[in-house]
Amino acid sequence: MYDYIKGKIEEINPAELILECGGIGYSINISLQTYETLQGKESAKIYVFHYIREDEESFFGFATKDERELFKLLISVNGVGVGSARMMLSSLSDEEIRNAIIGENVARIKSVKGIGLKTAQRIILDLKDKIVKGGGTAATLPTMTTNNANIEEATIALTMLGFSKVNINKVIPDIIKKNPDAKVEDIIKEALKKL
Image 1 (cartoon, rainbow, N blue to C red):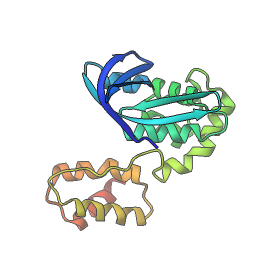
Image 2 (tube, one colour):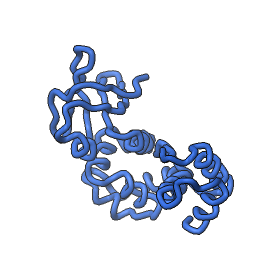
Image 3 (cartoon, one colour):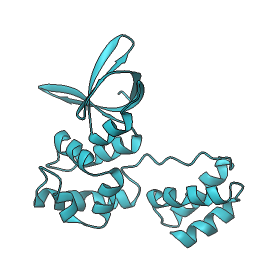
Image 4 (cartoon, one colour):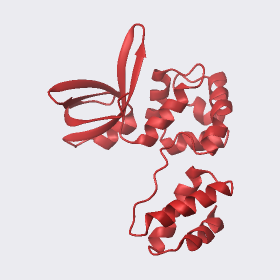
């Protein structure tokens, strides 16, 4: 399986990227989010999803692992194909999609072209628990001057207390920014106030 392709951007438009790597030009379908991230750059590292069907083989590329994880979750829903998932990621940001699913905002999801009422309800029903538990995100820990072991330990402790990795990863960077030398217990105490 391919994880990413790193190379020179030969051509880019809001729907497709031609990335040259090792003398080969890869045609990669992208979302508007990824297009906006890559505009003006000469080279890129694109996280890819290799889509294979009987009559079709293509790459879908993403500027971040989070966007790719969310794409994979969306296409796991019955009735949501790669085109619909890419349309969602072009219409809404990762965070807007996650918040709409967690908040059961059917109207927000239905506002995406090609997503009807039943599909929007199915997306919420199938993905709400997965997203609350931290699915659809590449749980990356902040890399700061603090001992990463402290951050990791605090994250594990907070997860065991029942908090989702998505929410934990939202509050820990702020705590570390304010106190780069925070001990594990300090990180946990501050996180508990914010979660």
